Amino acid sequence: MPKPLLCPPDLLSRDLSGKTFVVTGGNSGIGLTTVGQLARQGAHVVLACRRPAEGERARAEFVAAGVGGVIEVMELDLANLASVRSFAGAFVAGHKSLHGLVNNAGVMNTPAGKTKDGFETQLGTNHLGHFLLTELLLGVLQTSAPARVVNVSSCFHDVANGRKGAIDFDDLHFEQRKYDGWEAYAQSKLANVLHARELAARMAGTGVTAVSVHPGWVRTNLVRSFMPVWLQNTVLRPFLRMSGMIEPWEGTQSTLFALLSPEVTEHSGAFFSQLGVYRDKSANGGGWPLRSPNPNAHDDASALRLTAVSRKLVGLEA
Ligand SMILES: NC(=O)c1ccc[n+]([C@@H]2O[C@H](COP(=O)([O-])OP(=O)(O)OC[C@H]3O[C@@H](n4cnc5c(N)ncnc54)[C@H](OP(=O)(O)O)[C@@H]3O)[C@@H](O)[C@H]2O)c1
Image 1 (spheres, protein in one colour):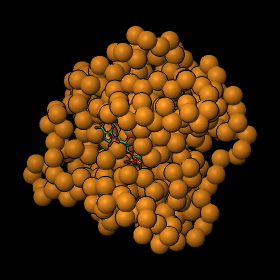
Image 2 (cartoon, protein in one colour):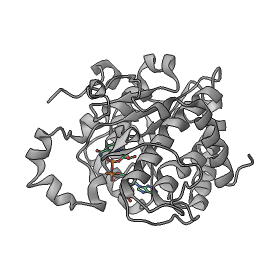
Image 3 (tube, rainbow, N blue to C red):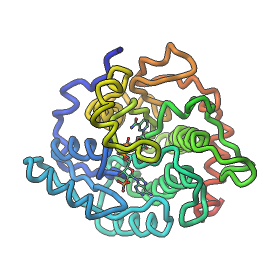
Image 4 (cartoon, rainbow, N blue to C red):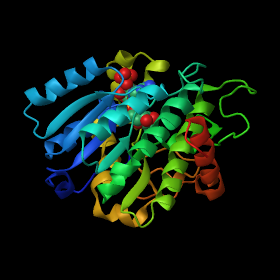
């Protein structure tokens, strides 16, 4: 198995005191590890999560382990636009700056369902909730520049278990076609890539860099919609590791690199990948950055159209 990409050690010992970050889905998996590392480097980190008690439990564990910085738990349910608005309002009211927004939270291959606002669950949670959040925090990101937005996408934006990643603008919410959980995941993860690409173009010259990342195939709770997490973490763990599954620390490296490496500002709009599974096998070793093998990920017209459609759906003017 090829070795996972790792950040240069000096990047992860840099002093981040005075810097503020928001990490969505910060109570679990890749988000949790991201929160811990940024706080360890002295940052003020807002752990945004839909279950504040879980966030507080995570915060207490970091504090007990002697992690420095400041970890602040704030409630955010991305499947509910009212919650996104209320989070953004409270953040802007209570914080002067934001240097990094990590749009990390996500669900995968969920059963057919709708968010509070009637969006297909995966597009609604993974893309539309984060899209609105980003728009509402763009002002503070710009006044805090240099600042970054990192969208945690997936190599499944290319192909997810055989389903090629595409945005179906005529049926975003699977109202006219048969629902397929992997197709919906691929669509939502391609939306993360296109969102970063369009945002980067829009933010050119402002000091706000936007990129998307693939974290690798990581041992987290993401599998819970189709496999018991305990099974992954016990009996199957050695076999899954041999097949390429990596640990949360390794799976956090792409996010941390995208957020902290000085090189990344030269690649705004790009995709940064840990080891992955792509239609073009030569991409499987990953790359910071990596040219996505999915032609749809390079379609600027689609990226612009997605932004226009997303703005309407989340209730911002076109
Ligand atoms: N693990 C992998 O192999 C892998 C591969 C490629 C991409 N990714 C991406 O990595 C990101 C992080 O996932 P993970 O692997 O760390 O999985 P995870 O351990 O399941 O963490 C996902 C996080 O998202 C949160 N979340 C889900 N729905 C939410 C909502 N409506 N509002 C707010 N938060 C919500 C979860 O909160 P709860 O704890 O309350 O459910 C949890 O904190 C996801 O975007 C995923 O698509 C993961």
